[in-house]
Length: 136
Image 1 (cartoon, helix red, strand yellow):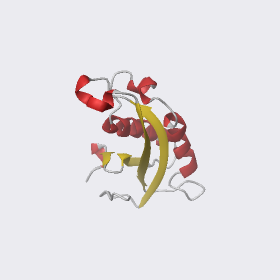
Image 2 (cartoon, rainbow, N blue to C red):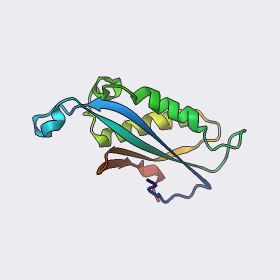
Image 3 (tube, one colour):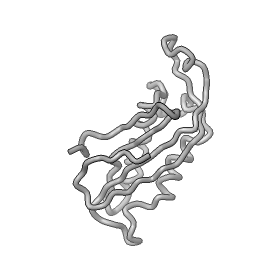
Image 4 (cartoon, rainbow, N blue to C red):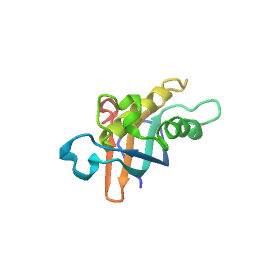
């Protein structure tokens, strides 16, 4: 699924991948979601930038995917340090992916930016995180 975003960068790159993880929302109001359950999260990262690296890439897809995939795949998300103080809702998962992905991108010399994180939890539910500094 491609969710377009307005930006003024010359290049846009989108990377999609899936991770299998479990989580729970530790509140009585969460209903069934208060019990541990799993999802095959479909994730799409949208990256923008104006210059390419020495290989002609905006970003190396495989390295960025590895950064996120290895962190989340086959994990109980609640046990990850990033979720010590927040519940692992789909919105928070998208936000934490943004933080980890943008941290990776800040180490790249060509300065790409993570513009959007799309996280689909079920066939009918997804969340998008877009940092405000990149919105038009």
